[in-house]
Image 1 (cartoon, rainbow, N blue to C red):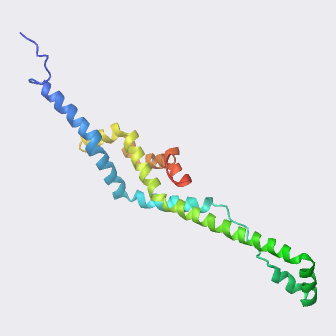
Image 2 (cartoon, helix red, strand yellow; image 1 turned 30 degrees about the horizontal axis):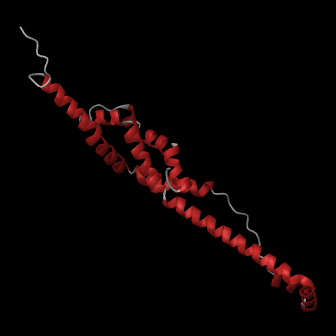
Length: 182
């Protein structure tokens, strides 16, 4: 009686086919099924709204400062006093006040642009979370796909929690903080 040691003959072909099927499930069908599940559940849209809301609420509210110009100040003094102050060097103070007001407006515009840029990257951060779960939980996702969705690993049963955790990983948070992962 001889023992078959070649994997490609008789029953060994089944082992090789099983390994190929596992590989296809882990690297092919698993990620596709995960993405379809996420899109079907509407998590991406919900995530995008949540990230945008978080960015908006985490922004410190600017204290409104009155924009007082020299004309306002000189108008309170009356025409004679205004001319006297201007002739004694008040014009230089006016230029400094106008420059400060312009710098404040420019700073507010910059903050608004930065906020708009961060909120425009909300979708990318959500996509990052889906990719992160797909990469780090590849075996579980592959098992789910390879078993024709009969075996539901923990990551699949708690997909919302896994995605939310992935959303808060440094890799995904960096997308909205600095414009992209480094």
